[in-house]
Image (cartoon, rainbow, N blue to C red; front, side, top):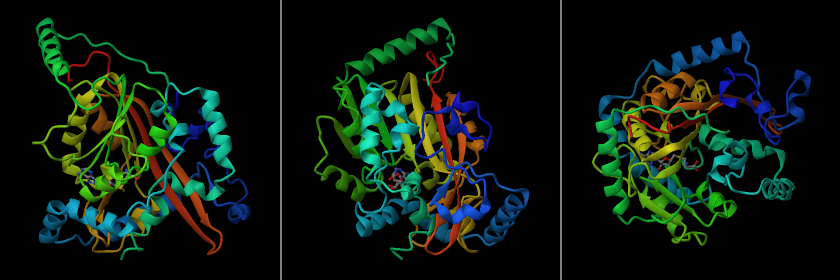
Length: 378
Ligand SMILES: C[S@@+](CC[C@H](N)C(=O)[O-])C[C@H]1O[C@@H](n2cnc3c(N)ncnc32)[C@H](O)[C@@H]1O
C-alpha cells in the first residue's frame, strides 16, 4: 500500500503513475539534462543546511500588530491576489487523477489511459512544475509584487440510535446536490483548477462537486467560468476557520474532501478544528485528500528574515501566508479528527531551470485519510 512507504522512499513505484515518478538522477553530471528528477535523496549535509536556513529566517518574527492584520484580513490579501492574477496563476492539474484516482473512481481505466496519452503530447516535461502552486509560489508571488481497509468501530447502542435520528433529520433537508450519489468538496478551491478537471474527467451522472474558498474574488471567477455548470457544481464563499458558519451539506454526506495547498494557508492553531469540522461531513468510508508543502521545501528556505510569523509559518510579500508541514503533523491532524491513514508520503523532487542552470529542491506531502465505516466522531 502506498501509504506505508517511509518518508523519502519511492512511493510512486507502487503506483501505476509513470509521468512523474520515474525519472531518477543516478549520475549527478546529468542534472541539467532534464527539467525534473523524482524521489531525490537528501544528503545529511543538505538536510542540516536546510535546518540552519530555517533557523536563520525564523529568528526575527513579524510584530504582533501585523500578525493580527494578516489574520483578520487574510481573505482580503487573497482577494487582491486573485484580482491581479485572475485565473492565470495556478495551472490546471490533470496529474490529479494519477495521484488521486478517487476523484474519478468510476472512470473506465482505459478512458483515463487514453486521456493521458492524448494530453501527454501537449505537455512538456516541465509539467512536473505543476505539482504545487510550485515555482511561482515559491518566488513568493513576485509577479504581483486503494482500496480502503475500513475498520469497524462499535458505538454504544444509545449513541448509535441518536446518530441515526440526527442523520434522518439531515437527510430530510434539501441541499445542493442532494440527489447526487458521489459528492466531492474542494476546500480552498481558488479559481477552480482542480474542480474543472474533475467535472471534465468524471462523467458519473451521480457526481456533484462542491467547492469553496474564502476569497469572494476567486469564487466569482469560478462561477463565471464558462465550464461552471450549476447542475453539477456548487461554488460558495466559505472560511474554513469560521466556526460559526456551517457548510451547505449535511454531516456524513461527502465521499471526498480535497485540500490542495490550502491547509498551509491558515494559521496553525486553527488547523485542527478546521479538519475536525470537515471530517464530520465525510460519509463513513469517505476520504480526505491533501497535497501541500513539506518542511524544508525550497519555498521555505527562500524566505528572508522578518517574514516568519511562527515556527515554519511565513508571510509572503503579498500578505498571503504559508506553513510547511511534516508528515507527522498531518498524521496527527487527521487521526485526531477520527480518520485513518491510507497514504502519507513525502514527494521530494529536484526541479531544474536549465536556462539559468538552477536547481530547486521541492518537498510536498500527499495524504489520504479515510473515515472509518462506523465512527464515534461523526
Ligand atoms: C495556494 S492557494 C491554492 C488554491 C487551489 N487549491 C489551487 O491549488 O489552485 C490557497 C487557497 O486557499 C484559500 N484559502 C486560504 N485560507 C482560507 C480559508 N481560511 N478558508 C477558505 N479558503 C482559504 C485562498 O483563498 C487560496 O485560494
